[in-house]
Figure 1 (cartoon, helix red, strand yellow):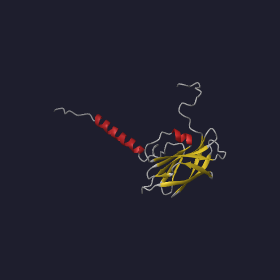
Figure 2 (spheres, helix red, strand yellow):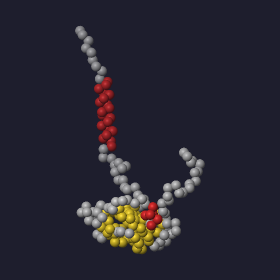
Figure 3 (cartoon, helix red, strand yellow):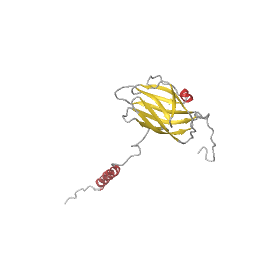
Figure 4 (tube, helix red, strand yellow):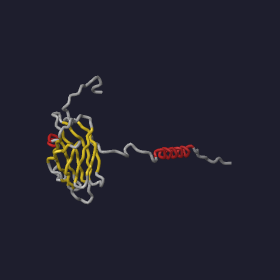
Length: 186
């Protein structure tokens, strides 16, 4: 009688176990909500869109300068698929009119960037005609850092209401001195 050579089933069992484990692991994550599924724009201010989705406002913030003046910072975006321009007719903060100094018509698929005069002056300008720059100012009605204000934007085809935060101006990079503390350099 001849001995027949029999192969071990251990490698096949190991491969089967690995495949089953991979299916189990993949199945466990199916349908789960991911951490990145609801991300929003990385801006400090409030953001919203008009009911017809043609106009969006982002980074809406009331900025208080150190000298007590106030300005409305925002970016308005014309998202109109029909390639029609839109015009910002007015803006108000807690019922106080915002002074808009500059062009307020937003061409189709373009943006309007607004902030205080010093902030707009410090922004590197785009050579594109698709970005409009406007300086803003508003009466300081005893606004306080960290508070909230009601902002209303009135465009030619929509009115947008949003609650915005009152903020201190952003310091230039490297302009502030910080106490190093005991954990500095760690």
